[in-house]
Length: 136
Image (cartoon, rainbow, N blue to C red; front, side, top):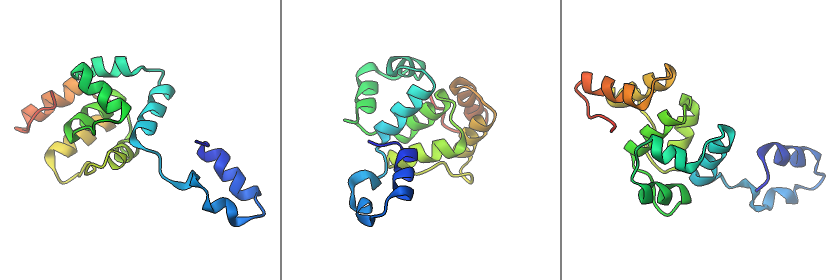
């Protein structure tokens, strides 16, 4: 798959709109997105599965695309990967899960954790203090 930058240049430089009929315009799949983030941050799937305390086979199934992550698993992943709110929103969207919603106290705590670079454990403790279901 072409990078977005290359695709943008091809669009700008093309004299023919036939380019727009190609297959390059589908949004990236969740697995492509998360693997790109892992490469960017120089992390391995194994590292993240361990850090998120995921059951090994479930973790690999998520990362190879054979299973869709639960919303709770996504919350743990976005914290473990240190994503910002926009990156987290995109990850939830691509995984086919409802995005974090600021009016939901549990989601708001995760958003707070993302904004304040909290660990998964710290957000878990915050959730428990607030009387909400924890992450872990």
